[in-house]
Length: 113
Image (tube, rainbow, N blue to C red; front, side, top):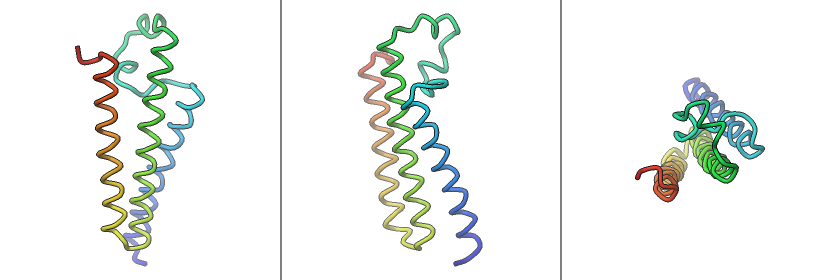
């Protein structure tokens, strides 16, 4: 195993760990919600956000960050096993699926009206 593989795998593993940690925090409904609706809202809008809307935002962020973590994990395994084509393809499908999911959920929630 070459040194670039180890360094690249460590970076990807840290990204995977970070996204899994954020997903866990969203699952437990603690901390800031990492969605555009929450991040762009004023302090007053955040305080007045109804419980159902806030739970939906937590669910969206939890799902997105979990799938991103899985994608980064696939990239890490691909670099370590040198099966780059296979695991990068799986990660690409996961990243594409999460992008489509995020857009569909945003349209369904009425954010784009």
